[in-house]
Length: 491
Image (cartoon, rainbow, N blue to C red):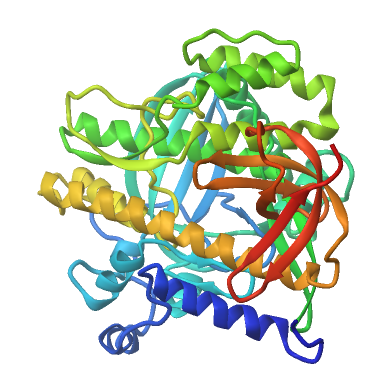
């Protein structure tokens, strides 16, 4: 039992550090990396040569309200002949974090920032990721710009990649921008304070909606995802809340998917190998078919993303209140993503859930090492120079990034479960509504509807599979190990 007098954040921070080390992740920055950091006095100098000066454009960032590691800016323009152009500026992290270097070695070791319920363990030191390599408000920064020209229906007509100088004109937050776009809240003061930005954001919103419509026509899945975030009062944990998708998140998501596709194809056009993010055809398609049948729908025997999306759309319309549970079940059954090497001329594996063939993580180099590696490849392609990684390097990097990303997710989940155990330890014996999120020889896991936490079903799991709903009784919690154990309640 955890005493109420103890600081929850401190407890969870200690658990996070311990589990990171257990999973092969490094919580701290080694002395050589910190020594390099001390020698970095400011942001990278403005780009020279063929780079462009785009600081006059109405660039803005949209991210979580407390985010300072800003990787992307966006801006759009309506074209006279119809259609629209979208620019995505990605922070030029490579201009500061060189290869090889101690900072690069540390980033490659973890490959990702780790976001736990108590603390964020950044891939790069905060002096860089939240300042010198971040696209902060009113800061002149170097960027790799992905330029995309679309027809009126959202189909891509032309694209380019180049280096430029940019300036963030407004630092915006998802929730307030979404409320404004959806008509449930006022325009954020950051938008009102920049002439023309409101019109530009509405154009971005319309453009993103067209891209989304076109992707779904190709079979992209309409899944309702949510993240569970802790709510603290000081250092005491008060609750866990679900942070769901909204219109502003959809806007950024669509532009990033498009930009990641352009990045992949740009490298292919230069006859360069690349790191791709893929989600293969789901191995548990048979269970997805069963889930649809349980709701009166029929899916083909072979995996078909268009048919699955049509089912999801109809299921959401029929029962919007429980669609998040169905989405979670489908996500679990689709399986995890992974990094692979795409060589010029080889058939692309693609991303089943996004319904895209070409997808290279390239838009978050402050937070993910694959994006930093891809940025280096893109800059080499733009300059016409030799690639910074050969195929052997990329192969080992793909395996390592997949493994470490999986390890980071396990850390995040375990610390979140420890936070949930803190909240639930005084509720032993209570019953809750739950849905099965995992079923295998290793065990059966369920997720509660409220609070949104996951735990192991210790008894009563016979005959259950992913997507089944039931009542469960809380029988045990273990904060240090992040264990929450349930038994099936009633029949």
